[in-house]
Structures are given as structure tokens and as C-alpha cells.
Amino acid sequence: MPNVVAIELDRRHGDTFTCLDVVKGNVRLYLSSEETLAHIQIKMEAVSKSTLVVPKHRRGRDKPSSKKTVSESHKLLYVTQILFPPEDVRNLDSKGTGKDGFTLAPGQYYYPFQFRIPINNRCLQSSSFISKFSFSEGVDFSKDPRQHITTTLPPSLSDMDEATIKYFFKVTVKRAAFYKINMRQYNPFIFLPFEPPRPVTTGQQFFVRRRHRFNYTPVSGRINGSVQPQKKKKGFFSSLTSTSRSVSFLRQAGPEFYVEARMPDPPIVVPTEQIPLRLFIRSDEQCTTPIYLHSLQINLVSHTLVAAQEHNKDIAFALTVVNLQNMKLPMGTMTNPAPKVYEAEFDRNKWPSAFLPNSVPPTFKTCNISRGYSMEIFMVISHGPTGDSDTVALAFDVNVYSGISPPEPLLHAIKEARQQAAVPNPYKIGSAAKNTTSMPQSDAITSENGTHRLSGPSPPPPADSLPTYDEAIASKVMPVSGPRRNFEQSANYYANMDDIDRDEK
Image (cartoon, rainbow, N blue to C red; front, side, top):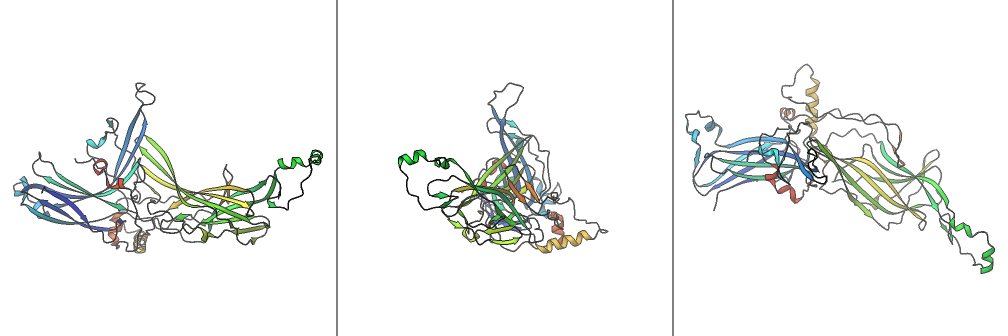
């Protein structure tokens, strides 16, 4: 049996890890023969890699259709620990026995380790020369990334080819002889960060509305969308003298109303929670004929901005969350919440499957990749159960949260520490990511496509932004003990680890 090295993680709390988790495990080493080693090192790493196919531009020498692949990698997390030899042995001077390595007899060895996952990233410059090259479609030199930002660590990402974020442990068994190949092994793990501190609930509603009016073409047996008794057919000669034959080409307008979607303000969705979506019909006058909802489709559209060197690309992908057909759902009873305002709600219990899948990453931004979301709603409605049907579309931005709230003791401890302005914080090295807020919006904003968006002033920024890793360690806050979702990843997340980690080969 050949020599084998493996990383065994303690996954008793599941496969998903989050900020401030203490990850424990063992490195198991089996030696079939005597080996002289320099050291055994374990690393906890996170790499954000972006890859784009772009046109070549080299002073007119390339064909217009020629392409090249450019890539950019950022080490968002890099923590190391020497497992062997022990620290007291490593401190031997140059005349000690550690100069020429340490010999281990054949057998099986276990080396325990533990790391605590930080909250914010600390981008590390790549030191490997080979990591500056991309070998797909020829050799392409990859420049060192210049843009680095400090934010909350991003989630694992494996749902697209152009952008990947992987978290993993890597063990290296370094042999003392330079001509012998070192032993290496990877063990990826899934990471889901804390969500931002949520604003205080005020009961305000965010909503998007679209004005609509049914247009009818009167045909036999139909006036203004309602079925009428059939009239007696006229003879051939009487039809020649009739003046009503042009009616079938006229269009008549029905009553004007609004189709409206509402969510709590700000609009936040979590994959483990039902989408808090409510659908309304709103009008300036009482509707005598109910409006029916025949089909409902809800799409979550991801917008991923990928940057590689001086190139960037915005990639959109629509995920259908709800697709209900043949509903024939009438609107509810009309209420009169304000003068000349009438509204009726569709029964939201009719779309109980309005959940995001566990594979959806939360909204995030890091050095070379950012992900945002919007929601599309398509409704097929009719004036009456058998009236002419129209399709109404609504769209608005949403934030997807991880569902893992920062522990209250952590935020409380940091708030107290920052209030002591006269006492400098000896643990704070870098500042946390700043919270950005938009300017207050007016009550009504109308886009070119006719969608109306009504909201109150933007909520104030949270009093407590997420602290740095040093602040969290200093506060000695325990890890989150509550439930967390099973954040699913594609098979590509666990493959091609050598490709994303080119350093120190």
C-alpha cells in the first residue's frame, strides 16, 4: 500500500460552515516505509477565481474572431498551521537534529488541528510564478490583481463557469529531500456567511405596481368582456343593408386599475423561508366584475458581475421559482382603505411553494465577483372568469440573505467597545466593510416600461456593522449554535482543486 495522507473534518453539525465556526479535524498519515520529512502543514484557504473569454488585440496581428482566456484569482482567506514537527522541536537551532529533517517509521499517524473561520476577507497577494499563467487555449500571462476590497467573506459559489469561489483545507507533507515529490491532499468545505444586521421592522411595505386596462374586441355574444344572450340570426338580404357590421372591428376599453406586488420593506428573501409576496388589484373605483388570476410565474434573476484583469462582464440568469397554471383564482373582497382607493388581494396561500432552492447564494460582493438579484413576476389575468386574458409583468430588486444572523452578544460587545472612544482598540487592524445606503427616494418613481415603484425613505444604516476578525476574537463570542441551511453546491465545487490552487506546486 502506498503512502497516503487525508484530511478528516468534524462535520457533526452538518456540511455548511459559517463565520466564527471552530472547525476541527485530523490529518491522517499512513507511511508504508520510513520517510524523512521537513514538516506537515495544514492550510485553510478561500480562492475567488474569475475567467472570461475575450477578443485578442495585439496590434492587428490577430483575426477579428480570435479569442483568448483571461483569469484573475484572489486568496480571500489564508491561514496556516504546522502540525509536525512540534513547536519545541522546530525551535532547535541550526546545529540541532532538525536541520536535515525528521524521520518517521512506517505506520499510521494522526495530527489534530482546529481553525476559527473569520468574518472578513484578507486578500493575499499570490506569490507563485506559475499561478500567473493560464494554460487554456494557449499560454496567457495573468497580471496580478490590483483591486482588493475588505468585506464579509463571500459564500461558496459553483453555479457558473465564469466565476468560482471555493473554500478548502489543504495539507502538504513536505519531504526533506528536494528531489522527492511532496504529498498533498485537499478537502473542500461549504461556507455560508453571516447575513447583514437587519434593519428594525417598521411595518412599511415595499411595492411595485403597473397600470393596466383591458381592451375588448366585441364579437358575437360578448360586450365589455361579459357573455350576452345570442341574438336571432338575420337573413342574407337584411345583412347587406345593416350598418352594424363594422362593430366587430372596434376595440372598447375596460376600467383602469393597477396590478401590485408587495413585500416587507426592504425586500429580503431567504431560501429557507417562504417568499413574503402579496398580489393586489388596486383601483380608483369599485370593481363590479372580479378580476381572475389564471397563471403565475415568479423568476429569481441573478446578476453576476465578473471581472478578470481589465475585462468585466455582467451575466444574468433566470431561475423559475413558481410556475402555476390553470389557477382561475378570483380576487378577494374589495376594501376601501382610503378615499377613492379600492383594493383586493389574491389568496397568497395558493402559492405555498414560493421558496428559493438551497443552492441559491446570498447577495455578496468581493474583489472580482459580485452577485445581486431581481425578481420577475408574470401574471395572466382576465376580467371575469371567461373574459379576454392579458399578461402583466412586474420586476424589482431584492436582497437574498443567508438566513444566519450574527450573534447578538457579538454585536453588543462590539458596540460597547466602540463606544469607549477614549480607549483605543488594540485588536482592530483593518476596518470592516462600510454599509452603503441609497439616497431617500421620492414616493413615486416611474420607469420607462411603465412600472411604478412606491416606497418610503430608505431605512437608516444599521447601528452595528460586522466587526473584523480581530474584534470578534477579542470579544470571545461563541460560534452560532442555531440551525443553518444545507447550502448545496454543484459537483464542480469538489473537482479540479489543483486548477484553482496553483500556488506552491
